[in-house]
Length: 152
Image (cartoon, rainbow, N blue to C red; front, side, top):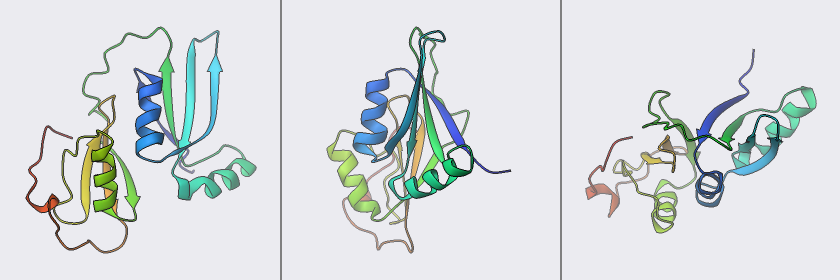
């Protein structure tokens, strides 16, 4: 058995792609559109995983991926989307990543006060955990005194 992907439903595909690709930095590997089923599936990978995705595709199904599912006619309220927990990504510099996301309009719900972990949410309210690669960075302002906001 091997892990393939996590599927998330999205309300607005453009807003979702802006967050996941434009702000977080994932890359689109492929997409499927179904006129009959009236949906679009967009598969994303972390930049450092694209080689693994290509190698995995050569053996069968591509992995590891994030699948965004957009139902063209859907008006379902996906609520807080907290039923699944969260997605986690390792980043090279937690402070630089949070600063970049904040400058792009993403709320930092759990700031990286410990130099190791932060949480943000996608436009569809999925929780995303950011973890510092390697050892935690020394505490740094404005993060170390920034309170939590909302929930993740």
